[in-house]
Amino acid sequence: AGRREEAGSELVRQLRTFGPEAEFIKADIRNEDDVQAMVDTTVARFGRLDVAVNNAGTEGTPGPITEQAPETYAATFDTNVLGVLLCMKHELRVMRSQGFGNIVNISSTMGSRGARNASLYVASKHAVEGLTKSGALEAAAFGVRVNAVAPGVIRTQSTSYDGLADRRIGAIGDIVAAVLYLDAAPFVTGETLHVDGGRAAGH
Image 1 (cartoon, helix red, strand yellow):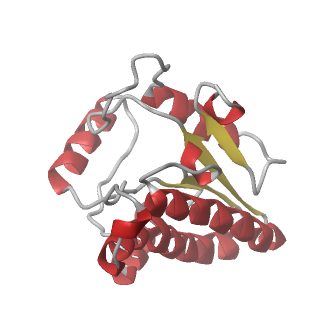
Image 2: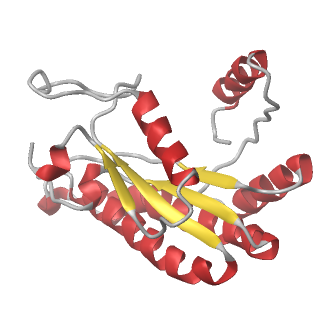
């Protein structure tokens, strides 16, 4: 699911060549009606909701705190925090009635540390990890787990590699492996799994 219909449809085509069923649902996670429709359409198509990975995010507008404005705050938090909140709200609505399910929120190494000139992004990822912990405590009562994965620098089409020559860069497969681990670990909930080549440890 996402806003880019052409890219989403191409991904569906690629997935189907490997055998699994797949559908693309156009949705803007900042809009609750879109999120509710996304979840309800998924359940109607596949019968249930086993796992949800909340992966949408934006880096926002970099710069010092003294240059930030309500508009830049809203642009960052509407996607990174409100979007995760709305997704969790409707995913948990379904999973509660099922009595099972697993949610993985994608955070960042910035979710547990600070960074110059990235205050809004950092604050939003701290919020994602707070939502993850709170959601895990609430969802445990009906058999649902909520965790987060905190990637370091990952090689994607949108990644900037300026100044990263001396740092290890991860691959998308590293994040996939972490999500699969969390899906296979029934006694893990409320945790943030750092996948960052040791950056959170001080590397």
